[in-house]
Length: 98
Length: 200
Image (tube, rainbow over all chains, first blue to last red; front, side, top):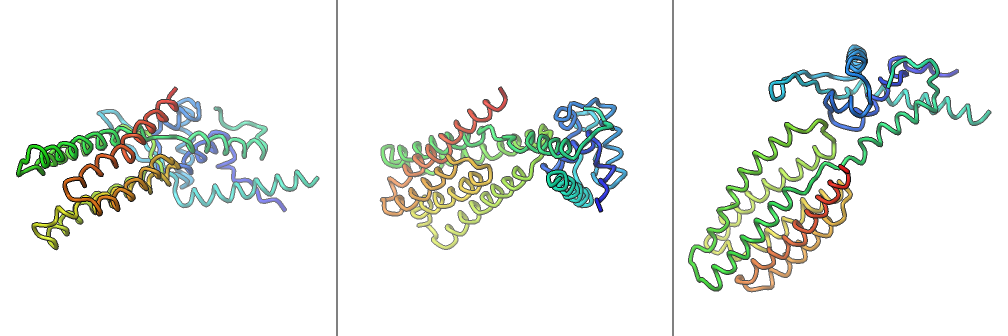
């Protein structure tokens, strides 16, 4: 029986955000936007969904008088990401053996 | 990049994860500025002390090192500014920060302990000790960011620390100048070149 892929992570933009954040300590919203080529609006929505799932932490502060958003992955997010990758590997193994 | 594609296969997922990780994996955030700044500063200071001590016979030859206090203040401002400007913070950057913090603490501690234990004769031992110490942050940073010139620079500092221990005091400071060339200045220019290549 296949493990169901985590619907929070099985979305292109949310997965891209998580893949970036798993590799760094923390990243600013503008950096994530640049690397994912997403629009600010869409990115905001997906960041919010990841935050609500407890996968990332979002800090809002002022930097040089402008609002600045910083994101970092949580322990729960790391665990979910690892499980997602494991599930993907299972799917791929079955695909190859067919 | 859009959300909620109807056909998002496991292969595409893995490909996306790999490509995003690669985007940050090889990100090189070291432009060599502080290596060059300190390298040239210590290089000229040690040459300056060598001249003051051996040729001018100035009693307070060690005063050239007062410049390092000014340099430290500059470094603090520079690092605060760089920290504020950074849009992403990596684990390697975080780790390297602690390596250099440990190094600065050790520098002060060894300076103090040398004076406390050796009294007036502390300066006879200061150059070999400092050179041995210089190798530590260079070696660790070089290993962490996988940059061989820094590792080689570290070994040159360690070899020069042994050489300095066999030299009379008046020539020991020249070992420091040579160490700056191999440990700080050459790797500094190479780091700068690598950083600029990444930007282009």
